[in-house]
Length: 266
Ligand code: 5BU
Image 1 (cartoon, protein in one colour):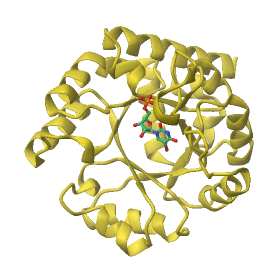
Image 2: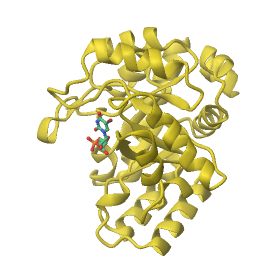
Image 3: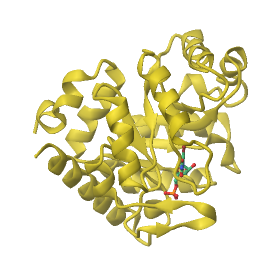
Image 4: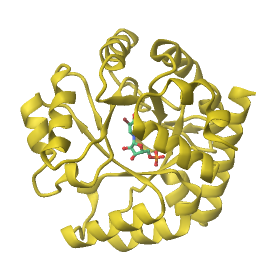
């Protein structure tokens, strides 16, 4: 199937080359899954890519939770991700003023040099997006920002009026790749999709085949329902990396997400 056929209006209206790249990879792999690779050893992370790379379309990292992180092993890991045809997405949740966010793209982890996407809160105002874009420019690269419009955790403070403002400001900004939505609540997600329109992406954590409450306030919704409600990518962590058979689990999430896309457009 061609991406234009699978994605319909989202493909036609997308202006971001990165979004098109993601949709192409997702179509090739028949998977709208972003793996949240929340393992704290480099060996565990490498194993995960080997096991599930073919079933996922993007890789989400938390670079600062790895116990044995080294610059060399991380470069190697990013190389492995590229070989597996994965976009790399650092879920750093930047939130500072523009110039500090730019500086935080450098530092020991040098996120600007290997990330294709990063997350940010818009709480400090729109300059955070320009700061992050300047960070990528500083090393001659480009990338996209996913703004947190909703969160999956219970009791979060991203209330509807805040979500609306994030979307209004973010939708107009070329540096914004899209928005994080709450994958655990399809009705909230539908509202978000209506506000966002068709051009930008909505990616959603809080998704698990075992729907319900997760650890420490996490909430989970059904992967297919999230996609039908307007999610373009389900972010799945423990559902895959803690499964007895991660490869089998990743294939199941891929299937569930792809079914959702076909249903949405069908
Ligand atoms: P889980 O194991 O599938 O619950 O992992 C979810 C991942 O998504 C984890 O890396 C979180 O940092 C991330 N996440 C989230 O769960 N909820 C949110 O609202 C945002 C990110 Br933003």
